[in-house]
Image 1 (cartoon, rainbow, N blue to C red):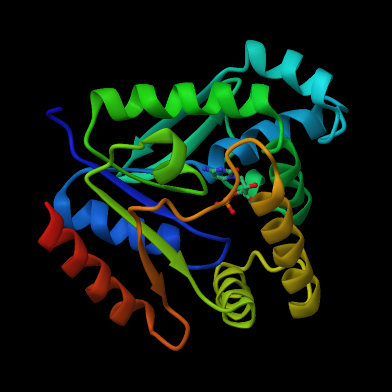
Image 2: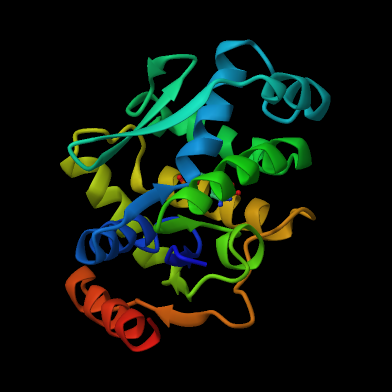
Length: 223
Ligand code: C5P
């Protein structure tokens, strides 16, 4: 294989996307936020009046979904039916919906197909839940990032606040994270799980800079 594959998995708020962006920049390769794809599916469902738990309707809906990931000045943009939905997919309703649609096997198969196509054509750092276990089982480096629920909720809260995108109280945000943690790790199709050959990194008590140093060292030693 001529392309580099780096898989970063873990629960929400563990710092995966921050880490993946740092790694991608350092190595000069593409970053793919796979969570954004499930979020776009949820947004489409909500806009079409489809229940995010209605498996049959979702399966039909994703058959011909027009979902494209493009890059503008190095930042990932998500185009859904030609419309830029990069911001819109970050609302609380879409966040919970994304975890619901992600249970659906037809949705997952469609997303994985798109993700594997991107990895076939490019060197990538992908972040998600099932990258090391399912999407890129032969990735060159697999990292499983986690942190305590309290710390993950705090980080996400701060991040949303700084971006002016905060729409929930801390407690609501933490509850939403707990809901997704359980939903994502107990579904039967490719649940959130550390791959056997992934390196586990618990970043509780680490600053993102410290965690990034560790991640970059792991990657350097493996490539
Ligand atoms: O990473 P992010 O929080 O944006 O992901 C949103 C949701 O998408 C997750 O809660 C999870 O249910 C789903 N997801 C997934 N597999 C991935 C990435 C995300 O099931 N590879």
